Image (tube, rainbow, N blue to C red; front, side):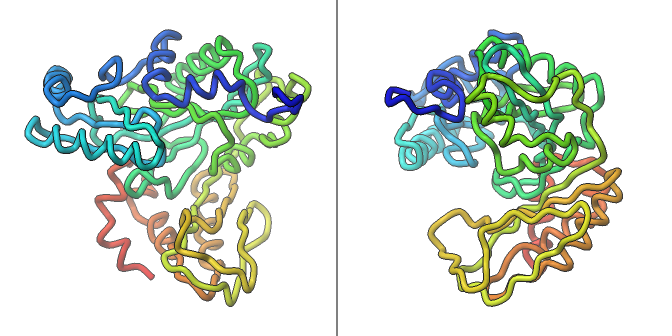
Length: 348
């Protein structure tokens, strides 16, 4: 901006505010969003941390203020475990984010992870493009996302959206962003805001018909959206499976599925090299159907047709998961993968 360039995204001050989880929690609370009980600021002293955790009640979770992707997070179930885990979380946060600041929250056992896709023009217009359920996670890393969520009713959907719109409007947020919640029973709690376009945005594009990238560019270059927030409707069901490399190697064969309601986003091509040094995700397989059952049937077929030679991937593991009775039921939380992990790891 100092050089006269247009930045595609929120103001830097907003990014800084929301990028600090402690400040983001306090901001959410200010605008009336429920937050999980936790420390109001950073904790570094073991004795104070133990006192705070005992007041909150175990289990608790230590989180990096600048964290993301599951790094700098430690679940603690007793006072005896806390000092060591506090130090580990802080060191991990420092190594990954150059900021060792951590805080403590009460840990919710097996909640759902639900997020709202937002686009806003910076002038008070805020549109909610439905919610995504991201509860299937391996060590806090998302594996499968779907929209809408099978675990959110209309009343909770409305309350989440009202709180999110209020917060984004007051912040004069501009561009695309995601507000994430933990859902436990009939209650939901603010977790964080990701001030960017997320990996799983295609499922929201499928169910709303809105091109999120186009709207973000319009919001940041012209200060407007092409969509009317009141006219957005959710049509059908969309599911995304993240395709991760389990081994490095050179792609020797690439056969991807196609047809109506199937989308493949990837950098892969025949002959390209997948190194071991970076994030393991090599592609995203997204499908759309008129309802959840049809979307799952389409995903099952698409995963069966996906063939990547030269490396091992988790494609067939994902196919096994979407056919698991618990996943099919729609009644699961973030502990689901851990419960089936030993079985999943044997699928090739």
